[in-house]
Each structure stands twice: as C-alpha cells, then as structure tokens.
Image 1 (spheres, rainbow, N blue to C red):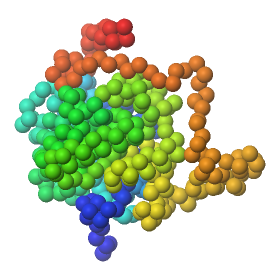
Image 2: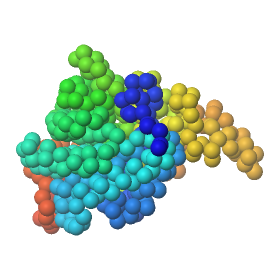
Image 3: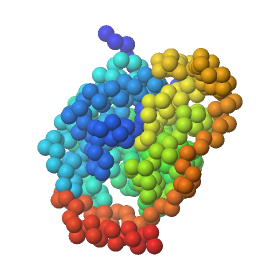
Image 4: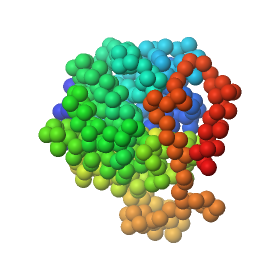
Length: 399
C-alpha cells in the first residue's frame, strides 16, 4: 500500500510550504485545447492527454497540489451564450478528478476539487439556486474523494460565502480564494472583511487568485490577514496570482485591460520575478503559494527553487535548470557564460523590444457588476443587437 499522505491542514499547521500549480485555462488555450471566451474545461473529456501532461509538468516543476481542471465546469456555464457541448458538467468534473488523482499519485501531491463563480449569481438567481450548482460539483468531488476543496475566483464575497457554506458540508478542508485586489470585491467589501466572512463561513484557508499580479495579490492577502486577526479569528493563507504585470489595473483587474486576453504576453513575469514573489509571499506569512492565469511550469519551478531551503527538497524539474542561470557556464559564447550568476539576472531590467508601445494601458472601466442588465446571462448566443449595444458601450467607455 502507498504511504498515507499528510493532508493540507496538517502540512500548513506544521509550517510547511505548499506549492500550487499554475493556470490551466490560459495554458491550455495557448496549446489549442480551451476556447477563449467560454473558458470551459471540456478538454478533460475530449483531450485528457493534454490535461494529464500539464498536470505532470507542474508536478515535475515542484507543485504539490494538483487542482482539478474544473474551472467554469458548472452546468449553467457550460450552456451559457450559445455554448452547446453535449457534455455534462458531471462528466467533465469526474474526468478532471481522475486525471488530477492519477498524476498526484506519481508524487507527494494532494488533489483539490475546485468550484468558482457562476453565471447564475451574476444573473441575480437566488441563494438556493446558486448553492444547488455548487452542490452538484461537490457531489462529484465526494464521489471521487478529493483531498480538499477550493472555492476560487469569486468577485463577490457573498457568492464566495455561499460556496464555502456548501463545501463545508463535506467535512473536508475548505480553502476560499477571491479574485480581488486591495480595493476589495466588486461591491467595495475590503479584503479584510471578505476574509473574516469566509473564515466565519467555514474556510480554513483564505486568500486571492487571478486578476492581479503577484505583488498586488500579496498585498491583498496581507490585508486579509489583518482583517482575520482583527476579528480574532484564525486561518491559513494562500495566494495564486497572475503571471502578468498589472500596475495599471483598477478593481476589476486584468480583464479590464484592452490587451485581455490575446495580447498580454508583453506583461509576462520572468522566472526571476517569480523568485521575488515567492520570497515576499513567504515573508508575509503565506504558506500556500501557487499561480493562476499566465503561469507556466517554469514559473512554478522558480517558486520551488526560491523556497527550496525552507521546503528541504529540490523539484525534479530543477535537474535541467541551474540555479540562477548556472547552466550557462556550459554555453559556447563567453558573453553568455558571463551571465551565469544571480547578480546578473536579479538586477536585469528586461526590454520589451516594442519601441512604439506604451509601458501601461488605460483600463476600459465599464463599471458593471452583478445586478446590471449587461451582466444578465442566457443560453442563447449573443445576438447582433446585443453586439451593437456592446460596441456603443465600448465607444462611450473609451471616450
């Protein structure tokens, strides 16, 4: 029999660093297995080999949480705005659990089943209706016996609390991660208050993911920690940010940037940026450290390498990567060999190679959120009349 792995709370209680995986949605879109727009994870059924391989690459890079690829895998999202997959949410969720478990068993990794925000909430459906959606996903996670649960990518703390309340009925450890920055959720609830509400609802780990760059996310989690402590509560903390620089974002994050989602590459963080992020997160008391959209395995490897002294292990993927460029000592060109040191890479200011491009953008800032007519979702495809209205709105926003 395989040895029993320590659970997520046991690891965090012991002060261990837990490294999450990266952004499956963006990574698989770039590889041709996810459609930008709906961003749904039917690849777990249609192309399981692609999902399995990405899990393996993150495991090799040092991740010890394999998160099920179940982002936007609720039935209301799978049939939103003209999407007609003819694959049920249950089938997608089950396949995702099987793939994550298969790869997790190849190392010391845990499987986390994840739920996220729903079109039903944005369309002002009732608490009962929204919770029923989470319950359907939870039923699969219980059937597949995932190790713990994550409610992630929530813009509104109210919906995140509903998700936690449902997941908590499982008896399994629950983490809750919101896609907010220091300005708080889309109704202005600040990070500290969001975190306190989530802990009171039953979350044992709280934090943020997506929408903002690493340092912004670390700042938001620090605010969460302050809020939890002020409320005299206790929690562990997690952070899984974007791999894109977002100094120009407003409270909506990177989806308001004009480059979203197809021209974000100039903003990508280097592996050396990830070293800095990992260290800052650790110094802030965060022990569950991973990534979201834009994160590739080499980014996760950089986190694992930065925190290798604290973890006491070196990831298998580092076999092919000399620390701080040490492998360049074997390069044929002498000027490249001269770059095989930490001091060079740590202080480099990379050029973009785009002399006509600005360093920052102006977010579109439409200012719509739950309750606004433009966010009401439906099964029918977006109509030409709707598109006409959206283009008029875009013109007004830019003006």
